Image (cartoon, rainbow, N blue to C red; front, side, top):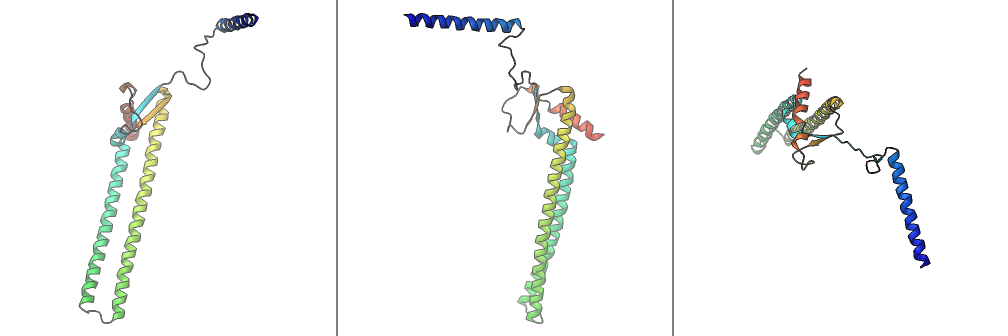
Length: 196
């Protein structure tokens, strides 16, 4: 019985202390339920941009893609022409060899080695040109990314978004209110800046 009375007195004392602490907090102008937790943002302003739309309608991106298509086409034509020339020389060699048109076996071997060297050179050229195209494509991607990021930094100075998310074909963003979509605004701003 004495233990039960001590337990009840202890609980009553604890209740009084909690009510006192709550009252003291409210007197200081703080509501314990509304107190901000350090490191947690309370007013988050979010927007998203459809990257597929930017890539298809941003004039800078369109110009970069057109330039890359032209360069790729030039590389393809150059390699095709050299491959056709090589194939023609290989066929001529094969015909001469089958008809014993070479003066000696040594001369046939020299011609074979020369054509083999042309084939190796063509492969080396192809690798070099493809590598150059890949490097240029990577450089273009970096320029494009920098262009968009730099624009968004300036754009956001007046808009005050906490977070701007990119969305590519439903990869990252499963659902968002269309009111959060700033794609057209960003696209218009990017194109206006690019045309200057």
